[in-house]
Amino acid sequence: MSEKLRFAVVGAGGFARFAVAQFVKREGVQLVGVVDHDEAAIQLVRDAYPDIKAFSTLDQLLADASIGLVYIGSPPCLHYEQSLAALRAGKHVICEKPAALKLEQARALTALAEEKGLLFVVNLMQRYNFLYSAVKKLIDSQVLGSFLHGFFENYASDEFLPADHWFWDEAKSGGIFIEHGVHFFDMFAGWFGEGQVVSAQKLNRPGSSAVWDIAQCTVIYKDNAPVHFYHAFNQPTILDRQEMRLQFERGDVTLFEWVPTRLVLNAVCTNEEVRELKRIFPNAAIECIDFPSTVQMARGRFKPIQFHQKIRLDTGELQTKSQVYEGLVNQMFDDQLKWLENGAWRRKIDATNAVDSVAVAERADQIALRISSTF
Image 1 (tube, rainbow, N blue to C red):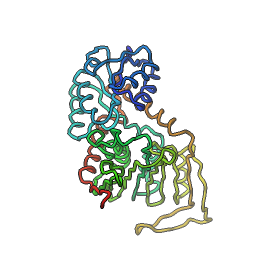
Image 2: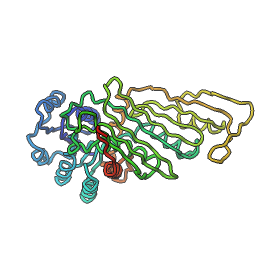
Image 3: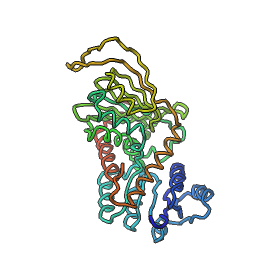
Image 4: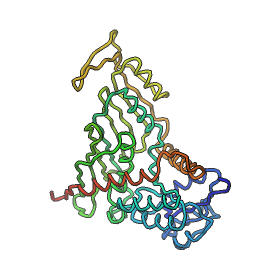
């Protein structure tokens, strides 16, 4: 870009401040404004960036012709109307997930952005993770054969989500599938293509009928491969933990943390397949669990399996979740800026991801059996 891209932030909560701190690292980008109903949140942003302007209303911010891009970090119930207003004002938009609480709204935003030639993208930054990309290469290589089954278990913390927090109000958050699940629906769609939601349940917290703190669903991907998504917000922060596992014909892969920071793979492989794994995971440690002197034969799914070794591959955890997260937000932002510089640039995520992830989340929410504490 020949001149600086001036951007403003709408909604100055904790994660918005985290994201903005990554955006301003990019040369040619300048934070110039903020709007939020919470004066304390605005002050935290201005403490970090004293030269920016605090706008009284969103309309005032959008009337500033010098602002080219708006980053929206407000609660989900505001995403649609704020993104719509920004696009109508001719601003590029980067929005936190989800794009909107309803699929038709997400589609409308995408259509409007395309009509006006504007950027509209949701910060589904998981696809920028090296481990995400490595797993995609693993799947495409067929080193471990066909995908058979997967799960994502999200034992999340509610320690900083008091009973009156907007997260528990589904009219404001959309519920767990829409507010949080979109990240993981997008990941699996990137790996395996479109899936079909076949069952879902939502469970409320005993003694608190307004709090639905567990959501789970099963999505079937190609070749009848089921994936189970489980989300529960009921842990202290110190016990917050996530795990994702993919089972294949010749082994399995486990990723740790909701922003994956480590991968462990167990498999039976030929010598050539071990070499391919080294190419996909160049810095991983590979341990030979069993190395028979002759070629071994096994069977699974009525098919012969030939192997030389049984191995365990471990990438180790070289970065913390926070460090990985910073990198992903940086890469997402840089990817979108490259598209603004050159409309032919092929991005890793665009408005399609925003729409498709909400489509799966909305379907899961629609068919979910609600199980109350008196069940």
